[in-house]
Each structure stands twice: as C-alpha cells, then as structure tokens.
Length: 279
Image 1 (cartoon, rainbow, N blue to C red):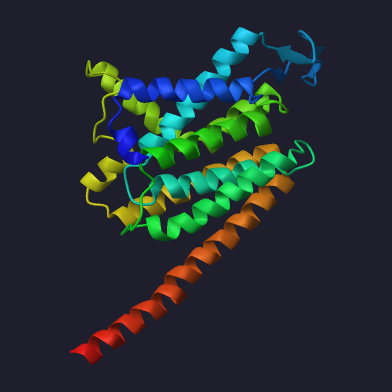
Image 2: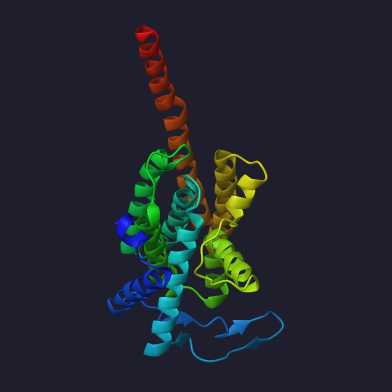
C-alpha cells in the first residue's frame, strides 16, 4: 500500500483524501450542527440570547466543513510522521483524550469511545516497534489512516454535543501539535513561494534534530507537550474527564516503562549471553 501511495503525486493523494472524506460524510460522519454558546447566555450582570439552541448547517455547509476538517487533520498527522515514534505517540495521546471525552455522561458516545480505545491500544502495541530505533514504520498509508480515524472520531464524539465555546479550545488543544506544525509548514511554503503540497525537512521535529537533540529526546518532549495539552483539554470538559485521561495515561506510561526496562532488558541480557558463548 505504501509503494502504491508513494507513486501517486501530491495532488492525487489530496483528491483521494477528499473522496474518502466525502464517503465518510455520505455515511453519516457529518458536522451538521453545533450547540449555540449564546443561547440564553448569563454574564452575571446581564443576560441575553441570540438565535436558537442549535446552530444548524445546510448540506453544502456541512459537507464543506466536514471534508475540510477530515482532510486537514489527515494531512497534519502525516506531516508529523517524520521521526521514529512521533506521529504514533502523539496520536496515541490524542486517541486517549477523545476516549476520555466520549465515554463521559455528557457526551455518551459508546461506539466512538470503543473505537478510540481500540485505536489507542493498536497504537500502543505499534509504538513499541516504531520508537527509535524503529523496526516498523507507519508510512503514508498508516499515518493517513490514523489521521482519518482521529478526525472522524472528533466529529462524532465532540463536535455534535458541545457548545462552540468549549468545543473549539478543546479540539485545538487535543490536536494542537499537528495543527501548529501544519500551519507553520503552509505559511513557510507560501512565503517561500513554493507549493503547499511540496515536502520539506523544516518541520518542528526536523529543527529539533538539527540543533542536536536525539530522536528519543525530541519524541519524549513532544509526548510531554501533547500530554500536557491533553490534560488541559480534558480539564476544560470536566474534572471527571480530566481524572479519566490522567489515570489511563499513567497506565500507558507504566506499560511502556515495563516493556523498556523489563522485557527489553531481559532480551538484551539473553543476547549478550549468547554472544559470549559464541565467542
């Protein structure tokens, strides 16, 4: 699949993403409405109300918003996949954050929560072999799939149930790293009078490596930032969501430490023993 995608030009990949997002919209993954934050707003000193309880979108508006969101996040995750374990780890934290929101009583999206948990578990298992030095890689097909799933889950689990005042900052925080890196890339290419579809080696993680950071150190820093933003985003939702996200992330960190310092340590000891016997 990666060889097939590698042979497709950037414009062709974009058209395929638009087609996939269009199919998702047709099947029901749609931004059809958001809760109006100015409906019966209370600002202590005065109250006012603008519009109805819901801000409804027509079919065309819904289609354009949904496809734009899915394509943007899909490409953002792909652009982040420029270093061992980076896109996988950040996507894992994002999936856990979406699960924490979806499983709560306020959202109550069990199907979305199950898919988010499944994606997070898959990424956790993959990260063990994708972390530096990586033995397996996402490639375009993997990063596109992860970005597509995260964007679709955000539509079904977040956008349909929260007010704009809560939804916007929470989604920005959850997807902050890939969104910020993509915005910088687009601005850099526009100001440099290059095509925004033209790849380069000037992303944030590339700059970190250029100043002397190792891939592991840069990945840990990105994970820490993503985790901190996830804490902030879930705190905006509720204390219960915040605690749920924190607990699961601590469990994941424990699992990763177990694999790193117990399983790998035993394998390295067995490998050294076999090497000594051969010599």
